[in-house]
Image (spheres, helix red, strand yellow):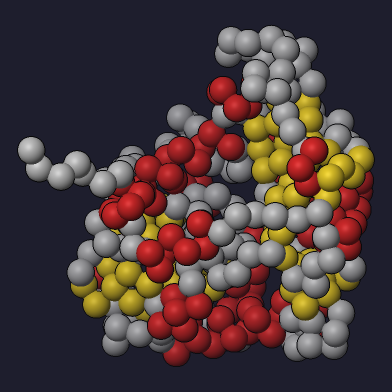
Amino acid sequence: MGAAARPPDERIPKAMAKNAAKGVTGEEIWLDGKFVKWSDANIHILTHTLHYGLGVFEGIRCYAGTDGRSAVFRLSKHIRRLFDSARINLIEIPFSPEEIEEATLESLRRNHLSEGYIRPLVFIGDGAMGLHPGDNAIRVAVIAWEWGKYLGDEGISRGIRAKISTFARHHVNAKMTNGKTCGDYVNSILAKREALLDGFDEAIMLDTQGLVSECTGENIFVVRDGKVRTPPLYSVLDGITRESMIEVARDRGYVVEEAQLTRDDLYIADEVFLTGTAAEVTPIREIDHRTIGAGERGPVTEELQAAFFDIVTGADARYDRWRTFL
């Protein structure tokens, strides 16, 4: 009898699994209006969102500034999107945006983080089961922890390898794309695991018409002849880093178009890069075994990436309106 097959996750390259393998730890979590010890932030096994996936969340980053102060990047915009996601999903958050913003800042303080990743999560508690949650309580948590480069330090500098996924992205009327909904990310997980198992770093997803949509957790941009293009909002999540980099690119004189893209538009691009809170600004050097441009981070990507990090750390004070200080 031959050797037993290894579980799928054991075939994922260790370098790409490194971040995922790190345990997320901290001291306190804001849960339903008060801070509790990290180990005491527990929920019942019959929590409705755990079974059916209806909940909403955000991913937010805090950066240490060049002046020694720490600031959260685009906090109010993130919290507004959290409330938009809840409205889309018929969830009424039992706290105000201002309370969630303050909980975000206080979570960083209490966990002694000068830099970190913050996850506000709105979920449906235990009680009624079945698809209709009835009068189950709407619960809210804010968690903050230390998290490095989502796609690795090498990915930020050298670029990553991606493949077109066999999984289609959500259709706009099958699952509304403007909401950042918990259960939607099963689609992303399947695509991500497929890409890693096939030896790539990330998956690029097409919509149900076969046009380029986005990646598993990032928006995508292409550069061709100095012009920057990105898929339109009706087929992608309205990414906050996406919006920011469109504005920054235009401020720097680039023509930026929101336009439909085909997969061969990616293959013949001079540069391709991703944006997202976790991924920040990450170049793609190869797609489906095709070298993109020179096979390394291109000049436009490098300029916009440098601009992004100058903004979030306060080195470029022109965009300080996007920073909320601790």
